[in-house]
Image 1: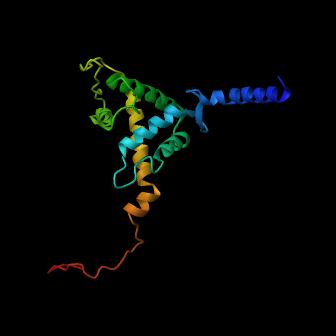
Image 2: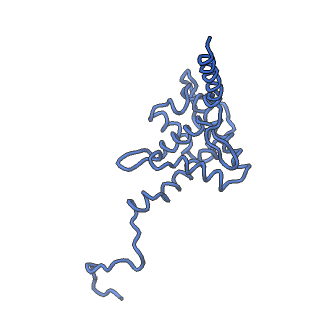
Image 3: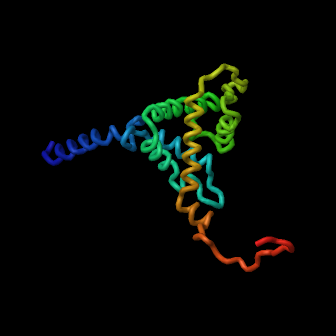
Length: 194
């Protein structure tokens, strides 16, 4: 073997060893000040936000990067205990989706995703109606405070991010400076006081 071939093979082995850790599933892909996030967690929040505010004739949550807003607000504006509860709730959310449909939230159809979120929209404290793979309702009591808090946090931050987005503030609600424009066609009724 000549020296050039040996050096080229050594370079291939070293570059493969450097790239391999980045390809593992649990390797964090986003680093925040207080926590790291994996690609699966990023995808879950993006899908969840898109299910809450889907793309129609208006941009959806993914178009407005609301998932990144959720992560940023979680990192900057919540306590460490709440962040830990959020991640525990995220794990329980994954367990719930696998329990209901035997697949991850990303693999569920739009109807299935909406059905999962509908379980949270019932009155607070209500147990999500889960179905096991056999199709029978699951009556087993479930601890879900962190689960409900997780969904409430994601939904609240998604809606907050949408109403504070540049799109919403410039296209949906056009702000007029006070006192506003003069409306000369305002109907005047008889006996109306000024």
